[in-house]
Amino acid sequence: MISYNSNLFLIFIIFTTILCLPSSTYGIPTKYSSIMGPNLDKLPTQDKTIEIFQLWMKEHGRVYKDLDEMAKKFDIFISNLKYITETNAKRKSSNGFLLGLTNFTDWSSEEFQERYLHNIDMPTDIDTMKVNDVHLSSCSAPSSLDWRSKGVVSDIKDQKNCGSCWAFSAVGAIEGINAITTGKLINLSEQELLDCDPISGGCNSGWVNKAFDWVIRNKGVALDNDYPYTAEKGVCKASQIPNSAISSINTYHHVEQSDQGLLCAVAKQPVSVCLYAPQDFHHYSSGIYDGPNCPVNSKDTNHCVLIVGYDSVDGQDYWIVKNQWGTSWGMEGYMHIKRNTNKKYGVCAINSWAYNPVKYNGRKPNISSILDQQ
Ligand SMILES: *[C@@H]1O[C@H](CO)[C@@H](O)[C@H](O)[C@H]1NC(C)=O
Ligand SMILES: *[C@@H]1O[C@H](CO)[C@@H](O)[C@H](O)[C@H]1NC(C)=O
Ligand SMILES: *[C@@H]1O[C@H](CO)[C@@H](O)[C@H](O)[C@H]1NC(C)=O
Image 1 (cartoon, rainbow, N blue to C red):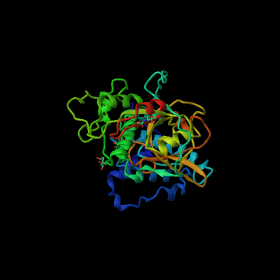
Image 2 (image 1 turned 90 degrees about the vertical axis):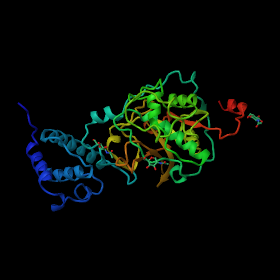
Image 3 (image 1 turned 135 degrees about the vertical axis):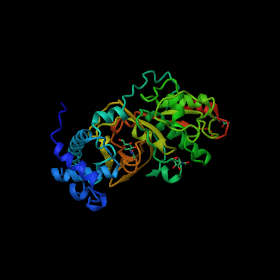
Image 4 (image 1 turned 180 degrees about the vertical axis):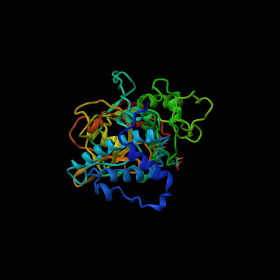
C-alpha cells in the first residue's frame, strides 16, 4: 500500500491544472515578490505556495513523473521556502545577502550536499609539496577590480552532477592567467583534469594544487571544445587530444592566508579558492554573504570556486566569486562574499586555500628571483 503524502490533494490540484490548462489561460504572477514581499521574507499561505510552486516549475521547466514524486518535491519545496523566508527575515542591512528560489529549490539539503559539496581533506604535507606561500601582504591594489570587465573570465559553467569543483576552480584560474598574458580568452577543459589527474578523485572531489601539478607536467590543457565536459570521470585521453597552444602554466603559489594576501593575489589575476559552503549556498540569490552559518576560525572546506574581483558598497567590502552551478543560481551565477573581516581564514574559510597559477609569458624566468619569492 502506498502511503500518500498529506499534501496529496493540493498536489492533485497542481498536477491537473498544469496538465489540463494551457499556461496562458490563467495568471501566474510574474514575480515571486508580489506574494512573498520584495525581500522574499514572508512565508506565503498554502494557496499562494501552490501558486509559487507552479510559477517556479514553469520557470525551471520542471516536470515530475507522477503525483507521488510531485508530492515529495512539493514538501521539500515548502521546507526550503520556510528556510528562505526565515533567513531573509533576519537580514539586518540592505546590502546583506538574500536567499531566493533557485533551480535547486525542490532539492533537499541532503541531495544538494550529495551533488555539489564534498568535504575536501586538504593536504597536511603542505610545506613539503610544491606549494609556495608568497607573502605579498603589501601591494598597491586598486580600491575595486572586476576581471570580468577585462575579458579574462569565461562564461558561467555548470559542474552538474559531479563533485568536480576543484577542476573548474583550477581551469578558471588558468583561463584567467592565460588571457592576461596572451590576450586570448579561451574555454579550457575541466574534463581533461577530471579524467587525467591521478591524485584528485574525479567526481568525488579533488585538489586544485594537484590539478595545477598535472597541467604543469602535461605542459598545458586541452580546449574545452576538443575535450568537452561530461560530468563523469572517464578514460584519460590526454595523449590523443592536443593541448591548447596557450594553456600552459609554469608554477603556482599558495596565497598567504589573510585578507591582504588574497587581495594582493586577486589584484594580479583571478584566484582559485576553496571554501566552506553551508546550506545558505543552496538558496543564495544576491547580496553580500557574511557567513553566519560557517564555522569560525576553521580551515575546513567543501567547495572550490574562483575569485574574479572585489568591490565595496556602503563600507562593506566583498569578493566577486564565480561559481559553476549554472546561471540560474545567485547573481547570474556569481556571488558576493564579505572580505576584510579580520578573520585569518576569512568568511567561510575563503582565505585558507587560495592558489594562483603563474605564467612566465615567454620571458626566460630569473630563477634566483623566483627562488627568492619562494
Ligand atoms: C565558452 O563556451 C561557452 C559555452 O559553450 C560559450 O558560450 C562561450 O562563448 C565560450 N567562451 C569563449 C571565450 O570561447
Ligand atoms: C536545473 O535542474 C535540473 C534538474 O534538477 C537540471 O536538469 C537542469 O539542467 C538545471 N538547470 C540549470 C540551468 O541549472
Ligand atoms: C634576478 O633576480 C635576483 C634576485 O631578485 C636579482 O638580484 C638579479 O639582478 C636578477 N637578474 C636579472 C638578470 O634580472
